[in-house]
Image (tube, rainbow, N blue to C red; front, side, top):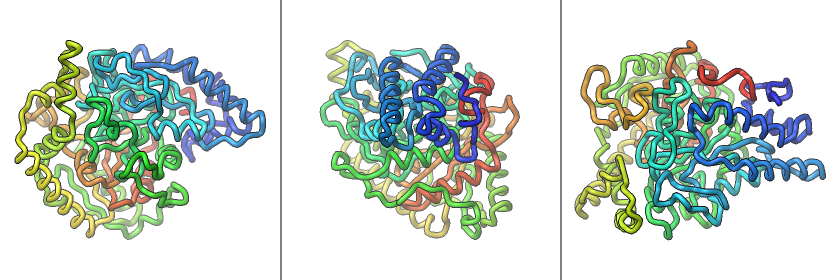
Length: 489
């Protein structure tokens, strides 16, 4: 079935709401929506490797149950029949969850992550698991278990990561919603490189369990003070609906926040008039590709002109916090458990994770990193007292060669392999709500560029409102590898 029928084609409210509305009204069935998604995955994923594990029979059983409940007159949630991909770092009950590592190549969780449990309760259909780097340690889409995930805009380039499969699956229109996790940018980075929307809500908005709260699995209980879970979608409206189903407290995550918002509604653009916005193309020190710099500057000026905001070139006095961030990651990683497990299984860990485990830190270094983080956090909240939003590029460059961790050169300057992710970890250090929205050249062949939007403490709705305003200036588009059919038409 082609889901491009008029009942589900409206993009004014995104793609999720029309799908769920059509399913609830029985204009289409959840099974028909699922089969359309599976058809697209079968057609495209051989090129992209976005999904590492499909659960076709399980998904069909879920869709059948949604249709049964509707036929019986039962209430179904706002995600009724919506196909969803779940990053392979997020636990799914009864479904292989490897964390991108050979250490867990046969691991099948006995419980869902809280966020998966909530999506199922809202009527979503979990299609399968999307690919990631090993334990999420690396902003790319390759590991030792599965084929490397490719960018739908150019299959010779990286989709970013570590939520690589989720970004590629949504960009290629295989599913309208995929979950990502974000400890240093892993929702926003693939969103930027794949030309889709990704938001890391305020720390605690979306509970994380078991994930980094699990005390039983070496390697999984990592990045506890940095980790977030967020949606990757084609539109801001779709992300808002997903967040309405994902947020709220649970005793399983002591950091989870009360439900502050009656609805995750997007405020109209006129509410942005008079807002004060800071913009920095480089944080005062980062090396940034000129195309990215120009696109983000242009977007900031368009926001100012279109919505009556005041935009100033400014940045918090934080300096290069990369070393402190890496040390915090080292401190929050179960390094001893991972080393022991790898030795017992005879498994060689690779890339950034292997270097992390080989490095020897001192207690003084961990303490110094904690204090460096405090300085960054304090400098940022003082800065945000003067501004409603802080805009930067999401990434320092566009998508680069597939197998690299990062480009060796940006704008003719030799850089470290992680230089391209200079902007993202600030949102994790501070816990502030931060999103990436596509901007830039709208031609069919242009590689995507993301504008990063950071809001004040707990102002997730403000970030959504500004994201939607930017989206209206740069309408969502499909990559060449995809086609114009499905719910994206």
